[in-house]
Length: 339
Image (cartoon, helix red, strand yellow):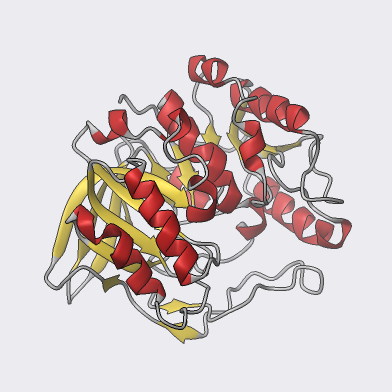
């Protein structure tokens, strides 16, 4: 697959905001305004779409959400699109999005994670356009911990420049910040320590491949369909698959990963990165054991507790980028090259 990267964002460019899944309730509008103002203060114009209603689990009917997202991704004056956050049922957009039109247009950055994986990962696989996993709009005001990169760092970087990230060694133990009471919060509560963990054995890891992945609860529903066919991407030197759970118990994680492996999502993987889970272990199965039970047959390195999911802070990973993962006793890092 020939991966296409949107050109780097420059001050003066327009950034589109729409909610392909869940919108923003009135109680969270303060946080939304803080995030929008952060983008403006960096020198960008913000275009807020019509699909933003947060009264229910969807911001608008599926047809309207699909049309607005397609419109923003194909508007030559909009250079990046970022939703406020994920949600629940972005899957209803997949048959309604005009992927052919998006593929013909000049590439535009799509940034998002959680339920947005349902759209972003298929978009890369179907159109060849790189997408960014790791931040949503509501995450934008947070200060980025040392060693990590924000979505701004990624989408403004010159193509071909290596983007290196290392784990900060600290993460949030539980819960979410209260945007209603503290809409302008800018510092993550990182009250626990921890590092990457190799699950499949011991020894150093040093592997390369094309990055692809996302949220388990979102992607498991389209595994084995044309929307999640990794064969063309895997054919270009193999993949580095990252996968993270939004909070499923260990038994559900185990079943889901087995199903995705049987559906071929991990075919061609040179390694698997697993996000740190916010869920507790099961009575007879831990989160780590669940991953191993399903993915050990791949015979590739499996590195867990990576900052790529529902536990803050967040790595920014580019679907389609060339990546290198190193994990040794002395260092852990991921390097991405857009090109």
